[in-house]
Image 1 (cartoon, rainbow, N blue to C red):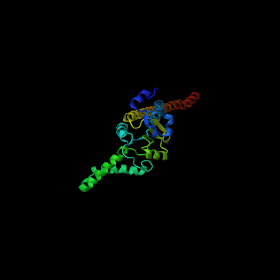
Image 2: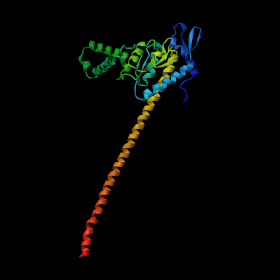
Image 3: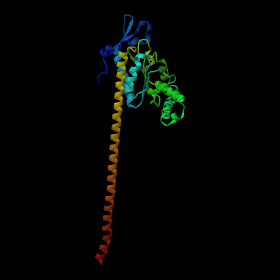
Image 4: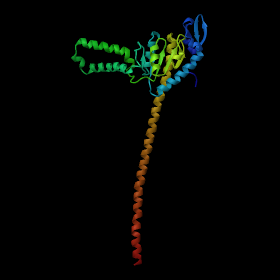
Length: 284
């Protein structure tokens, strides 16, 4: 199987540009190829390998039916993530990270339920029985909740993993995931510590071209996992139908054999009873 990307494809997106040497994190040393004009250049051969590792793992998570939460609140990334991840029905956070999003998940779920409650009020006639001012207040509350929690409304349980753009900016999300042992995937630039996450993809996390390209690769891996899951379900359904059909056939055969057995035993019993009477009459 060929790699999902190549050195040249990543080069075209500007994924190799790191930060100024003065802002580097020494933990990124293994992923830095060189320094040019005071800027670190990322080794894209290593980026190709890390993208492959991350994609395989994300594909497996999606295939298992679990959710991956994408986190990207920086300006260059938020619209890209919202567009590409919404299409996959995966949760994402592109506004401010709500503190306790993972570690206090029950409270976050209350906010999501409040959205559902307000929606119900709008349809069950409650709005008709309250003042215009109250309706306006509740509508504004709903708008705020939608902005902050609308993209995670379907997240009924903790995600199986997080994918983060810029772990330095999203350090609270990284810390919460680590505390709960939730696997983390991330685009990691030269100013960050790759050891903070489980699957670090060394690349430019500031250029929208680089972010969009890598997010699309990850989205592709998730699509593959979802397609495999659908095939698994269809195969299981087919296998179940075949088993049920076989059992039905076996039951019919067993029932037929029982009926036949009953007739045969009846025929055998008939002559056996008549036999002795014939022999007695023969002696007379």
